[in-house]
Image 1 (cartoon, rainbow, N blue to C red):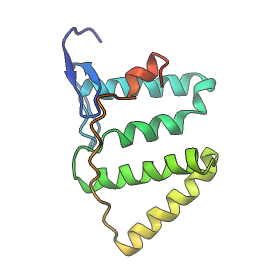
Image 2 (image 1 turned 30 degrees about the horizontal axis):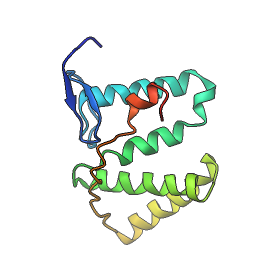
Image 3 (image 1 turned 30 degrees about the vertical axis):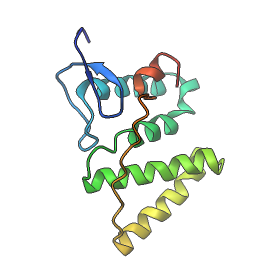
Image 4 (image 1 turned 90 degrees about the vertical axis):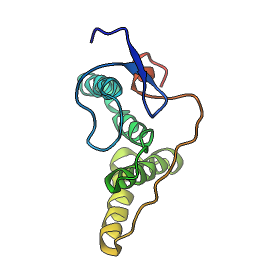
Length: 136
């Protein structure tokens, strides 16, 4: 990853201006997606980071609610529910999956439409780049 040019991502991060893949519906830049890939690589390569994997995935997903695509709206909702279960209800990662599965089943059965949540403009991001620097 050699580039000096930087571009803003919708999550508030400033990422390298790269050519490359992005998430199918998050609306992130290739540089931002690259940073998240590095976070995942660290999670999978060091057991000490593995315990935080769910938080890394959930926080990245909820920072990219920038389009009204149905998949993106559902993703943001599910990851917010997961963060609530992990942080507010103090459930471990395995138990946090139960309310997510229940909500996903109910959503399919009742054909709920998740709202498009517009993120607040805080001027700060807790994106993958900060996690890699150890500031997450």
